[in-house]
Image (cartoon, rainbow, N blue to C red; front, side, top):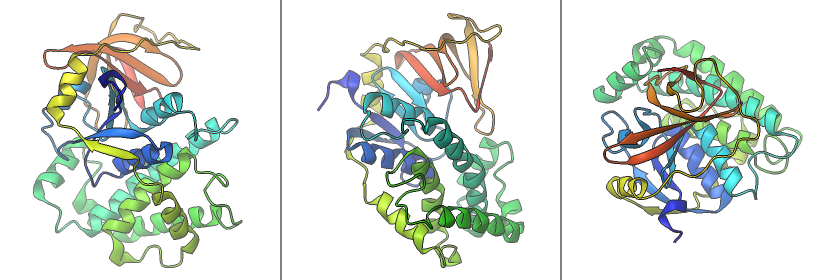
Length: 309
């Protein structure tokens, strides 16, 4: 087992589609990692000291560096484990664009189908939590009433995916799995497992075969870790040094200034700290917690708002 400062730790819960995306990316890399199971609804008392308030799932921890959002996790995995790549040479921008569609438009419409279909059986705590978490965007009663439209939209997306594979390619961007495959897989995994009776994939043989190929990669080599031990690892290590190739300046948020970072779609809980680094792809802030100690919290640039605190 690697020393604590270099161990990959994933904070996740089993039913999260974005966590499944991350678990499969870890399997794609064939790496060992530690698994910390977190609650699916607030409170998340052992995660908040690490993230400073960010509550989306999953979060990856490496020592005292905390990576929020699966897009940020993907880039860090490629940096540390270049082969096999998630982002191919010459395809980085294209794959990121397609991945952003899957992580937002596809994901939210699948959520509408799954939660709307199961609206009468969703636990009340989950229903309330997701409504509050999304500022009303995830509204099970509205989803239930709008099923005809939502299912038509998801079927449209499914046909796009099916036809992306109709030239015989093994994966969406060619014969090797890339970042976009894992982005698309997460929502479809949720749809296939939690709305199976809808038979949404009935005439999608290429898509089902593609999902099975991707799933066969597995989840790498996970080993259970307690949330308390994850906090001790953060406390007892130091954040890694950061080198930026293309540092950027954001008005009012210079290096060392106190800033706030928040998602711009849902789960907008703000995280406050001191700016360590910012470029076109990521934001890194330093914060200190009585339990976790000094940590660097990493966010993607796209989809996150950076403002002076």
